[in-house]
Amino acid sequence: MSIFPQFDMIPLAILTALFGLTLFVWFSGKKQLPYPPGPKRLPIVGNLFGMPSEEEWVTYRKWSDEFGSNIIHTDVMGSHIIIINSIKAAHDLLDKRSAIYSDRPPMAALRKLLNMEFLIGLLPYGPTWRHLRREFHNNFLPREMEPFERPAVHRLLRNFLSSPNHFSMHLRHMEGQILLSAAYGIDVRPERDPYVEEAGKVLYALKFGSTQDASLFDTIPWLLHMPSWFPGASLKRRARKWRLVVDNALQMTRDKMKGELASGTVAPSVAANMISKLDQNSTELDLLAAEGVPATMYIGGIATTVTALETFILAMTLYPEVQRKAQAEIDSVVGNSRLPDFSDQDALPYVQAVLKEVLRWHPVTPLCFSHRAMKSDIYEGHSIPAGSIIIPNVWGMLHDPNIFTEPDRFYPERWFSPNVPDFPIQAFGFGARQCPGRVFAQRSLWANIAGILAVFDIVPTEDGPPEKKFLSGLISFGVR
Image (cartoon, rainbow, N blue to C red; front, side, top):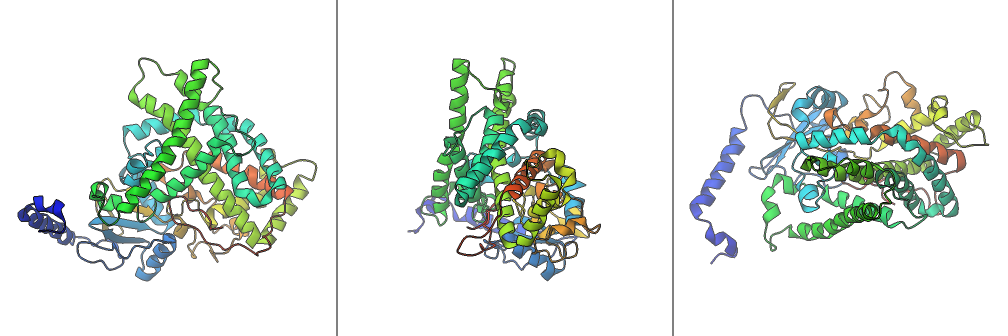
């Protein structure tokens, strides 16, 4: 009797045919133009046991040096993976050929197991994605966010003064105040706001759903249906816990909107504006957009902006000379009687360079969102198969020593050199998939960085400077 009773129902002939088909696909791939170079792979499983699980971006960059190519090929269980490690290759493929590379992999852990279909950036290329992205652009106007930004930044500075050791909590509260007000008309509590706290939990759900382990649900889809005894089933059990977190965060905002609609006390917001336009002629896409647009603002905005500000604070503790130089510029231009505002931005070029260096030194999404090749392609004499998962190593691109001298050093002065790009736009993605909220993110980061530098000195705790170490995942948090 088989120790795997579920397999007793499968005829040996079918198993043999499946094994033969896998071998055929494996060996038939060795044809015409070669794949890009990459690490050695085993038959059938490919590089399943050789993919990094921590600070993947560093390993992927080293592979480019080892194999002498800016694009690397590997595979896991027959799923082709192309890793892009240079700005030029990313521009050539993801920007210039965006018609081929604008799709997403299944992202099954995030979309199916965690029920995060509402995040526009996760949706596959097609009419649903185009409709929601268009609605996002029509409803999320960065200039209209300014009335929400100033009071939130002022509250952040007061909170820093009262309890500086809780800076991460204060950063989430600040960004939550801006985005929840704009997205849902929610006036958040001064502290321990339940909406902000739930958004913070969703960040960790995002991290869980975007790890190397979670990506196995894309490369080995049948794992989604694996029985409870199968190795790896613990991932599905953990996913159920995180799905409850995600569902609860969304349900809270749904209940809030339903209650206000019923009582006729709806506050102005993106959600209220989109709901007011729904009628009997509205389509399912319209209904999906009315939920997906504000939810993407709420979750996506908090995830990215807060993480970048945490990186800024880390950099200031490790590079105090940079902090002093930025503060001296603010003092000379703004003085001590008021806080910097957007009218000062052009007169504070070093502060702007600090912002750019934050995005370069450790991008919020060091491996970006993966793309998917919708058809076969050829690049610099190498074959890229249709269906390949494309991983843009943004960290690797922005740490290219041929462009950025001493790439591991936090050095804002590099942005005054004519030999570097004008802005690290790679930190916001590529082609049609570039972050739709990037303008707001840059404005929010600048307002907070300038405000914090104008008021505070950022110094290490008594335990000494923190370690520069970042967790893996789609959103890369610093380890504290």
